[in-house]
Length: 172
Image 1: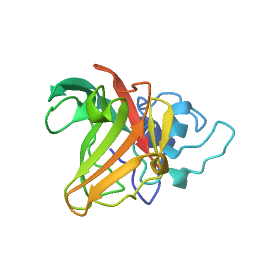
Image 2: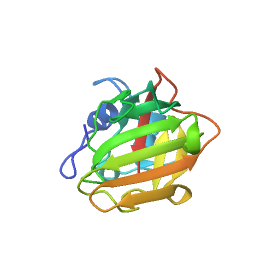
Image 3: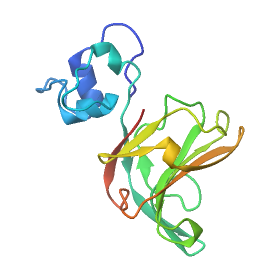
Image 4: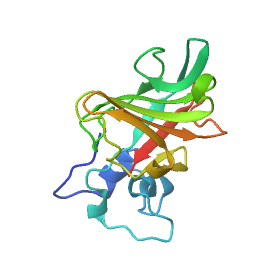
């Protein structure tokens, strides 16, 4: 669940959102905690910098459509994988997919897909992080239609969304 946007916030709440267990040892310099705000190990963080931050855990599946195999999370043909929190705080659109294409005209690409109201613009985030690697929105090819869909595509020789992998994803 996304951290609150105002009021008192505890290190324990931050730790749970980052994937830690309640009541266990944590510091603001732990890698998983730093990933919430996209800061390096030498940077300092204030508690208010965690307002509204969230981690999205994707459990990757595999599927084939029109002889092309995909791995990751997708809500339409082929339906595959799952996500623990589909509420992306930076958009009102529905998160429809985060997947890797293994063939066809989009071979070897990472794809982020949004559908419905709130989609269609090339905005809302500047960077996506998957499994420790970052992808700048400005480095992606974009295609969209207002109120229908937004699609970003990054060329990538390596697949961070392999079948059965569980990946933490972040949007900044």
